[in-house]
Length: 398
Image (cartoon, rainbow, N blue to C red; front, side):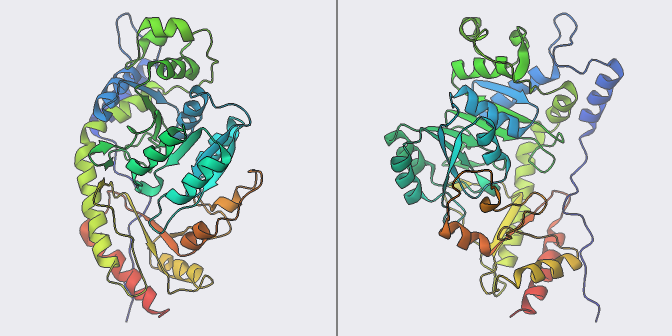
């Protein structure tokens, strides 16, 4: 009997909306691709995007950036992180997070995660006290939002500034409040596999006028900061415009035009993602040997990926399981692999970090964790086929 095979790509995104293609094409024909290269009284696409995203996110200020990683670095810099400072960060994240900390000359203090892929609150509290760190770079990794009430309480008690990495949680909420609105400043990504797609890109958001002004000037506005869309008053810039170094990382007109066409569709797309996620969750949860941590009822998630544990498999069997699924078209990633592969890397592979800790709980969780993208090019029927293949391959190891 021939085994079924899944034929769709796990990395195929939906097309850019026609209105975005039209606008980007008009810009290319004009040759005016730089966000400050404008006709008199013209607003740039980047400026309009900043206004629209700030309104959507519910914040006062927004800066469109060249990448999400750049937005994280810039957030650290404008918050006052200096060389040698200690930055608390969850150990379960992707490489741009510790990379951003390294790039500003600071030292990551990696915090354990729990079985639900959240930052471990007990370890956070203990390391907040022992390290005396004054910053937490909190990644909502793979869309999992931790208990933000408890995190903000810990950070408030220890006078720690929260910087949120929302690369995977654009549109997610905790008790009705959007991710990105808990910290002093936040970074978002619009890289191809995120919730809106410009190939590369990102946002920095804040309600702090001083930080916003510093970020705009440092992004490379020169003295053209007034052409940005969601900024504080001229008075605020008067105090910062000569004091903020230029770390050029602006978003260009093409990417901004592409994103503007997608933002109005995001709420609808969140519902589509969650429909696919819920289908996979239900079907995978019934497979012997697979477990998926339950979501907190206070969290509103965006299910653009799913993580599950294969606790019944030995560690040396997991690569074989992943390979057998891939042979049938189902592309899984294993976060427990010692060797970095593609976008996936375990914290102990970041050997540029001084005095890398041994985080036994994190290693134990990641050792059994499988990760899978859920692109919107999939349908519910596709999710059923994927789950059927995973079940079939898992049964071969039971």
